[in-house]
Image (cartoon, one colour):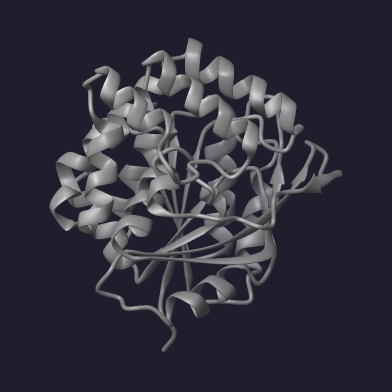
Length: 301
């Protein structure tokens, strides 16, 4: 029998687009799927729509809860779902029909005793599902780069049971995003497999958490605002500290040294210079790299 995949979705006032997303999940070529939804306190018809689908399909579970934010809601879903593999799902995207099949095929080739992640690519669409553009195909990643950026978008991710168990055993009190935390676990202590085939139509709306898909310079402007004005740098540093507290002893000696350096709260001239002139690339794009090095020079990360 094929391995079971839990598609976990946190919903909040998603009545406009959730039908299209649910249809795309139900119509996957991989059939051993359970859709586990936690509604995060919606005030519109989201819950009613989900209950309509429950009457038609017997593989949908719904949990209704108070508003705790999408990050904590996804962590709660990991605790609620029992499965072999887990896929994060947003409420407003559209999945390609082979998304889960491709991910499971990749994960089946990996050692299940380590935290493993398989992810694909996405294309950007507007609210009316009009094509905007392709996302970056050449995704380069390493543990060091993972401290400063998550190249795998949550809705493209599928992880194994070991990843889920590690997250619920040591759930961070705070992290930048749930998908970034998941990515850090797998790139640091397990395996990450990337397929550059588009698996998700990523619907871009003004309410989205980031400005991805709206142009590189607009994304840069969003990052500057979010990092400098909205305590984003503090959240990134705290995420590193949480990771160090939970998993320092499980990292390779090389990765442990990297984490010690960038998670440090010591801002001596020597530490700042080591960060500023760290010999390996930390971001894939040169402008992102320059921004990060300037942040080190200012002593704010």
